[in-house]
Image (tube, rainbow, N blue to C red):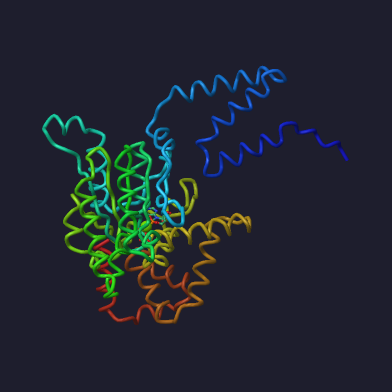
Length: 380
Ligand SMILES: Nc1ncnc2c1ncn2[C@@H]1O[C@H](COP(=O)(O)OP(=O)(O)OP(=O)(O)O)[C@@H](O)[C@H]1O
Ligand SMILES: [Mg+2]
């Protein structure tokens, strides 16, 4: 066996890794400085190189650095962080948006990028927006996307996590978070906003809850125009209408339609997947009632299986179709076959071959159904 190489500086290396990958990335420069001093004599080139790197870092002053310098607010009793900070991700791929959502989100971003244009006309950009929609359609992801496009850190306050058993404290916590976020240039997301309203059924807490909503309303009102305040909810009907009204803009995220499902599949398969339009159409039929989050999981699962089995992705989709057909009640298989030719424009013969339904059965299927499906095809 070959001799193991001696790894000098192993401890320093590990400490550095812990700092960088844990929650103390802000302490990395400090620690590097210490290492540079320690090795000044034993390894002068290394020490000098670290010194140069450190000088470059301290010369830069970005929003991100300022914000990592101030500690995140914590809950007074548990000492746990109340918010999560995410750095902007420059290469992030855009979420799949239906056209109306795309327009609204584009406007939010553009306003921020052209603040001067607005301020010349004595106007401010949209300060706050409420994202409304079912689970897994990209509300949280969109907040991340906007922050990345603007090159700003994203702070996330998850209200379902922060609703502590003592509501009185939740009010203080919400205030602490908004106060903290107000002082930085950032995007703040109040995620799962309806968590506040869900507590309303308990009569003893109504007073506390009212106070909490009041705090929230005040904080939204006082939110400065140089930051962007976002909030997300699955249950807009639970929200106090006064909360709704406070937001400059309300953006509805619908469940994906057939076209969105296809775009998401293409996106998750990756540009070079080589999967034909026909198979993307088939997969979109199988996933048509899913949200983006489920589609991503399914497509990723297919890609993973294709890699592990060393087969073409199309082959894996074929297998997925076969398994889906086997587990469906027969009426649903017939309905799937009919959709394939009526909506996806496949030949009846091909639809029959893929689903195992006889062409005879398909021909006999009632004409009303076909009319509905024809309608679905033209609606998109
Ligand atoms: N519009 C989208 N385009 C592309 N991928 C999406 C989209 N929406 C969701 N996804 C995928 O699903 C994951 C979960 O989405 P996200 O957490 O943003 O949903 P959400 O609307 O915030 O759901 P919830 O209401 O449950 O919080 C994302 O990380 C992403 O991978
Ligand atoms: Mg979310």
